[in-house]
Length: 204
Image (cartoon, rainbow, N blue to C red; front, side):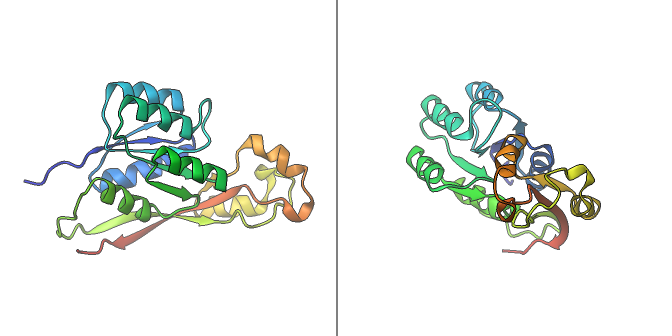
């Protein structure tokens, strides 16, 4: 009898990303719980033991690194993965010093996140073909420059990727003011596109 995969806690305040990753991992056999804030995460961690905690770096209230640091104090062998749309050498070094197993800049392929989780938990694929899988791919568009002063509601490009794929704001509203202060050639688009692709899951 195949054992049930361990429980995952996903801490992510962006609804589209949170729900998409949850659905993808759930379909792959994981028991996934989701929360939007660091405070909510710590309440769950005090009551439940999780195989892996996946944390966004920037959260309302305390950030992902602070959550993981407190989680390690509660349970020394806590395993964690940090995801962020704002990678930096400082946050990466801090993540490593706290013992986070991986550091994934957004956008990332959820396939890679799942592989990392599986390795962390020492799980091996059963080898049974599982048929069609809906895989989530995040296509980076944040390298584009904003030409609409971050008024996404009236931006033709934002509407286009929303109609075709859906969007995720990889740069939050608090950062937009900082971006507006930059020269025009440095004002990056704050969106990433979300694309669902049906693929055959490889048999191992």
